Image (cartoon, rainbow, N blue to C red):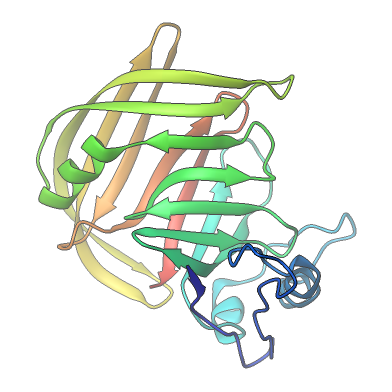
Length: 221
């Protein structure tokens, strides 16, 4: 586990993992928030205003994703901080984090109704090989009382057309794939655009009953 990027340019930030801790994955959020919030033009409530992608790209280095929640909250950006094997953790300047594997969300922290953990192994294999088929999905999320709930979903993955994605530094074609999931009264439909290596470059993903869905656009690998 290690910090893999340092941001330069407008930020001039040194990523500092907590040196006084035995946990090498701890992030120095004081430094991170001070720098990212400034770069992303914070609004009066302390959030990130809708900065233009070009400005955020110019002011940062490393993996960058634009996130557009479907619940009406403002668009924000997440920067890649740490790789732990196949998992990559991204963060905002206001202490929220998301962990992705192959571009699929596996955990969130600080968003509210967080996705605490998930098993999407079967989905990832279908995305990697661009095949249709069934995929069992397991999600653990916090409910409104901060109690962890388990959700086991039966999903069906289908193939769609080849599309072009042009956003930020990304300009490539990919295969659109759809994941339709259900478990009792809960159902949702995720969409992914997957490149030739099975990496998701654009998606709409459901996070939890409380958080709903969000659009994810990779701006830089």
